[in-house]
Image (cartoon, rainbow, N blue to C red; front, top):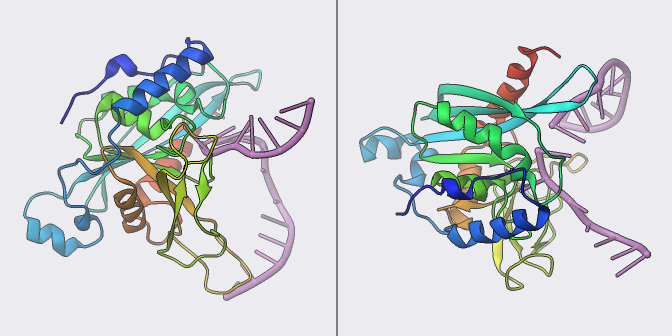
Length: 263
DNA sequence: GCGACAG
DNA sequence: ATCTTGTCGC
């Protein structure tokens, strides 16, 4: 096991080229295979928890919302962090930092990373796993926001995106049934050999009848988690909703916290 | 030049 | 991400 890499933290003041160079460095430092302490089975079966003895792992969900100034411009980002253990919320924290740069596909962590790291600093519990809203390895330089944050903190992390940034599904992802997955592999737009498995389209939920459909989630390793385990965990943590519970709760908390600050 | 593009 | 009511379907 290695160490946190605060030296690789996102800096919104870097040039685009420098940001991309930093991402290549992050991808090199990232571990795209299972390397965490808990048994992932305990996330889906409470019985496995009892059998293994100790506390269930602390799983954290993280999502952002944005605040507008008097002129109506987005000027601050709010990161909401919800820590859960055994399905229960054990802590919630949030942080607000000024927004430095616009949204640029591929550079999301440089826009939203600061509030995330600030919020995680104030969290008293130690996360065993962090789930982010956005991509991990499914990224042009294999360094999406989940990978970037995971490497900086050296915490196991997973990226959960609602749409596909890049890469190619290995099969049609339309109208699949609950629990199914389709591999997402590298294509020419990705800085990896063509065909490299980057993650999975995961159908965490689907309607019964054929008229209305739910799109899959695009799950990829952030850091210290392999693609299969990432998909398994996303499924295990999703029950009544499309999003894994920790992320859904963070999404909701990000909105609530925003209201409590005006707007 | 054209198309693609997490949140 | 965000602006927002009604509305389609089970």
